[in-house]
Image (cartoon, rainbow, N blue to C red; front, side, top):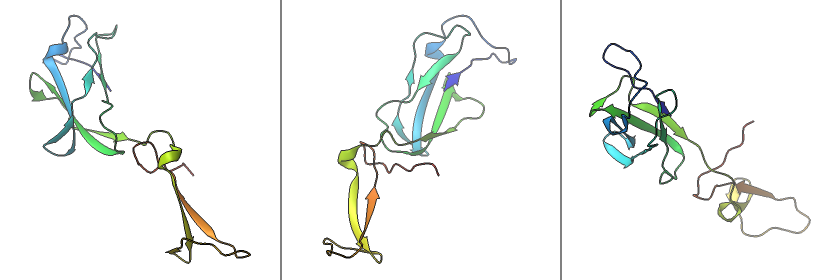
Length: 131
């Protein structure tokens, strides 16, 4: 996410180091802070700042990110941030034998069987492919 600072008249602030004037936090449930985003310490050439998702968030899902300037929420905050699963990880992927909706632990020679493959990432998040 990129944060653009503006003054009270809505004019973009493009000069100066304002890193200490803003903060952000991720919440899954309102009021329960999961992690503090990482603020890049150097402003971009256009005066904006990058806010990075911390690697401590390992569960895929939708989170709220509140952004504050001088301890006041900015307009539009909180923002919905969707965190997707990481790459497929073979050690977390499971294969379950099934037939007629029931899980079986054995197969029968000469009989077609079905197996359900649960593809997961390193953190156990389901990985769903786009249709």
